[in-house]
Image (cartoon, rainbow, N blue to C red; front, side, top):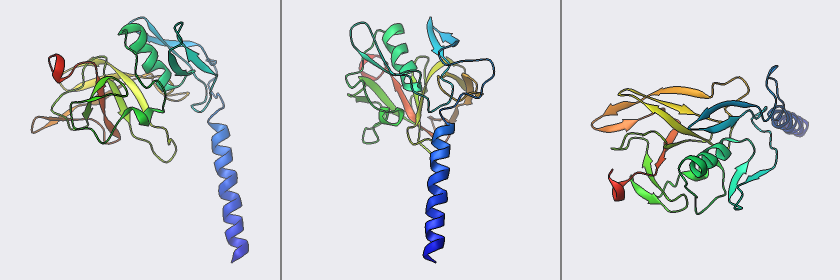
Length: 200
């Protein structure tokens, strides 16, 4: 019995280590880390290779922390900094940390200096909003992306480090139920410069 438990622990540990290492490997045959693969409002998205790959911290010229190259958070913060002239008071944290579950819908998220809306909000996502995805078994850090297009029934997001063979742009259906707007189940919510204080 004890031998079986030890074997399970060893195998589980080896699988975990192997999974962590594989996430750092670039399996794409034509892109290398740092290649420009898309852009939005003149802000580039860079290929990151394996989703777990890291390549040092990216700092703006004024010292503002943009994040770890070329993770999803780095693109979102670099986009807000360059395209919207916005600095977040708390410039650190993983994607999951962008969403504060203690806030009411439409309340100001002081860490990010943005208005926060829950999945199921009265406020529909708008272009330039940050969509925050929940963590899961294979990604404990969550994920963030920028809304780059909005129609009556859909939004399109643009994202960095979605995976070696994933699309940088994805379309998600927006469901409206009793005047509430819902995205995919794994979406926690979205952050916006626009809110109750400036014409929601």
